Image 1 (cartoon, rainbow, N blue to C red):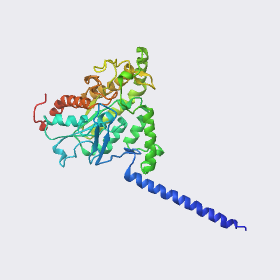
Image 2 (cartoon, rainbow, N blue to C red; image 1 turned 45 degrees about the horizontal axis):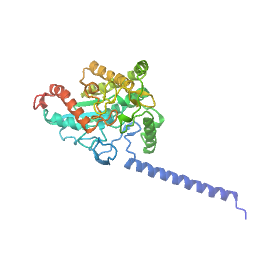
Image 3 (cartoon, helix red, strand yellow; image 1 turned 90 degrees about the vertical axis):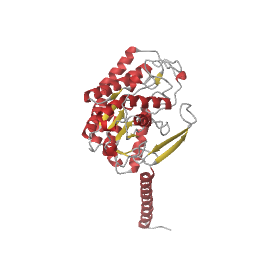
Image 4 (cartoon, helix red, strand yellow; image 1 turned 60 degrees about the horizontal axis):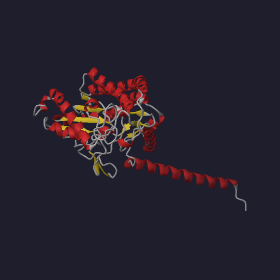
Length: 382
């Protein structure tokens, strides 16, 4: 029996229409789901900061003896770590810490991250002090600028702390994108689409996560004694540092200057912090390992001396930016000891390390805060 061609075509068209309709419905459901649930925990939608609020995550730690067995990470109504914003913030000395994973301290339980330590230390000298931790794992100065302009500035904090450097290593590709996003100009087609679609944003963030993995921005538990040793090469170290200065550090300094300008425009007092690390010209007091010879980056073949030389280029830019703008600098890179008691990997702090950082920041910050905000002084700073 022959079937009329027109009837066959209509049947195929109807089937194709049903297929398209089903796909469209599935995409709508997925879009709504990603907007409501955010299962990947991504903090960017295109170029917009997305901060989950009122969350509490509990991690059972069975790998690192340097960290608590149970780690609680909570975020408040602002999406930050720390107490809720006071009802009358103008009457408080409000301080926000901005940085990457070395500020967020996501593997340190609530109250042990260094901004929380800082809050407790300052409260013994300065009254009505409110400190929040706005660190976001993986963020560089590009992300800090977005966070400052989109979220933090509206809170009108009196002080913002920036712990910067390690996530900006070899990130010159962010220079033009940084300016475009902060000034709210359109950038790539994908970014423009991601502003309006949670699906596109999720795909973009998965790509960013893969890039971060390739850039060695992830961290892991460290066993210094088992790491390979590399022979020192002063000539190669100088070549590596020279390349950083010429290709990467200048854009980093420009982004730092942009952060300081944003703070000035918002009447915020900025404080810059340099990035310390468990590598460089020192011997670990726990293991006796020469921290200049350990292999820090297998992909780049950087030993501790080379890696520290690179990081110091960014720290020097941070010091120079603070001096040029006349803003306070806390030089953690020079003041925090290189000891595996204080780090569980090359840059992330143990509980003891976080305590040391918070206390160090408090001692050096108390005086400048008392000078700028004398109404909050309760006891003289040491």
